[in-house]
Amino acid sequence: MTEEPAIEAIGLTKQYGSFTAISNVSLRVEKGDYMGLLGPNGAGKSTTLKVMTGLILPTSGTVKIEGVDIKNHRKAMAHVGCVIETPEPYPSWTPAEMLEYVGRIYGLDSREIAIRSRDVLEIMKMWEWRDKSVGGFSKGMRQRVVLAQALLPNPRTIILDEPTSGLDPRGMIEVRQALSAMKSKDRSLLISTHILKEVSELCGSVTMIRDGRVMASGHVSELINGVGGSRSVMLNIRSRRPFTPDIVRDIGGCSGVVSVDCAGECEVHVKFSGTSEEQEHLVGLVYSSGLGIMSVSEKGADLESLYMELTKGDDVR
Image (cartoon, rainbow, N blue to C red; front, side, top):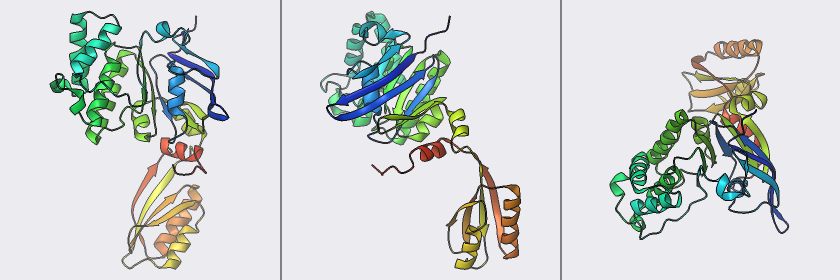
């Protein structure tokens, strides 16, 4: 018998009057997998997660958590920890009080709540603030507290909507490290973000959406190989004298040269993606012009290449 996926969404559509927020969104997160839901601002990531966690009803489509339809909300979400958008904790409560409240909802006893509260607050670097009112916290500190709430019930599946929003660089790194450490505990994760680094460091699979529609979904390596999967070479070329417009034009005109960027009067960076013969021609031109190649590095296609390929033509938002 085939094991049920941690999360399965089929044909999700959500309309508000004549506006379609998401259209026919389908994805599948296998147990133990970390998937990134990636897309520009306004792509429909938060709407997708709200539908998947039962916060709003879809116009059409279905969601199952470990095989349980989300319509059976209590059972489906019994082993799920989630943070959707940026929830605001009660300002007069302390982190300890908030975790006590959440623990009671999940039916935990006082001893278990105390043990788990310490664990998750230490993970989020908030233990020393456990008895301080949340109202005096920064946005990043409040975000850490709500992340601690999501982890308190020791969930098998975690759903997070831009979890590092509001955190400083150290906070971002610590949250990623905490989530990464949980992989060894066979948890599943669906994390929405527009930060490519988060997905590349955490996730083995990705679903990319744009304008409410899925552009690609699957394992990161397979998608990269399928879209924009070529490798490129970066050449750092220097001259004792300033580069003339003619030589820059000649280098840029070589077959296989993708771009030529000036890094000063006497240095250019050349991105090349062509055949061996075309590379030999480029190197020959460089040396015949009295120039020197200071470094050569090969760069494989990555998540950024895939993202840029799939969002060609998008306006900056």
